[in-house]
Image (cartoon, rainbow over all chains, first blue to last red; front, side, top):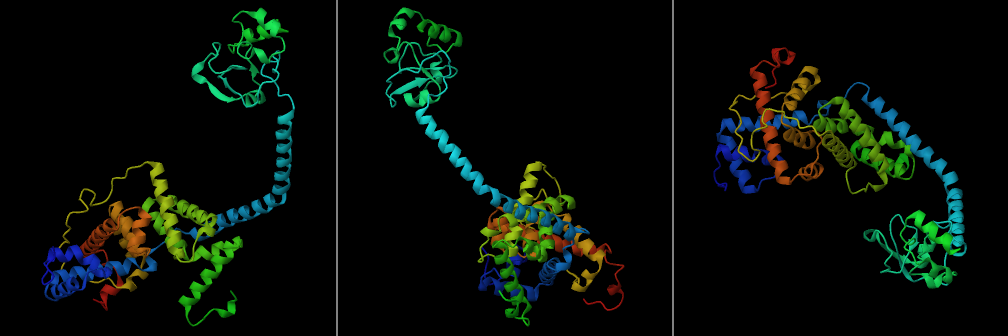
Length: 213
Length: 220
């Protein structure tokens, strides 16, 4: 702790920068002023430090490479102009393009609600009367959706739950086993009696659907 | 703002008004005025980048990039801040980011091994002779001062440049460098005392022996 009445040289060195910043309390400033009056060494350090600040704070101390300003101006001009022209170009065609995108997107969305989605398996049938909000399960690399818990779900670690409507929109087809009641060829399904389908294997799935036709 | 309203007998005030006017106009989309706005600070921006990157080519590139970022963000500038400080802070960010990207650990400076919290005792050069500001007209004097600054360890040099050359205040310096106010004060103290020592030693070694002002009217 600094003794406010008398400070030694070491304390002065420690505070000399703050002193020059005007960042010492009045008592310490007074003690330091007193010290500087009697200590030549510290007053020399003070003057030297003050001189350093004044010299380096001079604008002339900042030198830039030759041509710096010209190169900066050129680069700014290029980019500022580009930024301006880019915006003006964008502004002329951005609005119609955005409108077109919205229109096309709207059409696709509307169509997705009504048209039959393309199926992941061309031999499959989409099912009939499947409640659209019914939660079903799909797995990676398979083309079939299942009722949760179906024995014929493969790659169970990749299970994803979604609604039947979503699954069909994504092109998934109903499992011949667990979704049998929603398929037209119930009789055919009974004849399947094998584990040929519902495993995501394209060959097995295709065979099953061919049999079902 | 109409040009006629600029108070000509008060250049500082006029400059400030002019700057505010330019900022507002660039913010409204008059992009071509941006260089006019930043031109008064281009030297300080370069110096800030150089303090951190040390290489003049890198510093120039960083300074240009910082100016472009300032342009891109000009609408975010708020009038309550000093424009010069805002520019320099963007520059410091850009330079620091580049240094981190380069992942270079530069071992440099005369004082790297010292603990910045430890006490620093100036060398005993009681016969300090003041270097007059007029001496800065001479390139060799400026070069000697720049050389002395370059010998400082990075952490001291950065703080010194931002505070004493760029004229940021202590708080702004701390914010720009992402360090505490206490660290800024400690490093600033050390930097100033070390430079004072180096310049005093320069006298001893005859750095300025060829300068004309030493022959005749010594101002000290």
